Length: 318
Image (cartoon, rainbow, N blue to C red; front, side):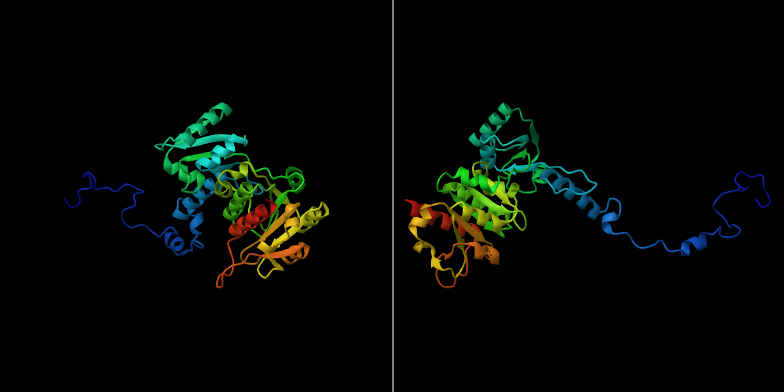
């Protein structure tokens, strides 16, 4: 009823939002003000990019990362695959814990892995396959993952003592793919080489991928790290080693190499597929040999070339 101010709800209380107000209270002015540049996707809270960055950081921290100032570094690494883990445990590689994926087939290798891990007192953690994929960063883990301490590189001089009177040593110049490194370590172990030398810079490291590709040979065949590969090769020459470099258009073909020289202490140097041997390394080698190939084939994979060279030396020594 008009004029009935006593009716319930007829009197509006002060401070309510509905209805006209005197002035805007600065609301219109604030609405016209800019909110600044749009933040990057990775900086927006709970954005897909930010979540992906968190997952990547968590995974890299589990697998082992390089140190960053102001950030804690996880120095552990992960060995995956049943054969590599069996070999690592047999060799007594310092390990921290063993992960087993639920629902895997418990074959003889898995049972041996568990038995050795228990004897060593390692924690055994059963996790889902999805979690296994996450912490290893690979799908070919075969349901097992071993967290180990960082790989301990040998000193290049140690390989001379390890190889006896006539050692065979592999030296890698510019091999940056860890799968190639792992495959070369595997071939070096198969043909009885004393070890493998890699330079500190521009070279693959003994990561989990290299461990797996070596199929466990990394537990038996040492990998040494050289501060300067050229100086290391010169030191090997002074110790009596014959340094053989592999490259296209070499001085001689590999099958024609001097048998007597091959039977003594030998260092085989393998370069990258793209650039081959560096200039200084080439100048340091005693001889450059080539692997004969059919026309139309430019080069071999570095790990394949290393296997062929190791086999040729092994045949010469027989």
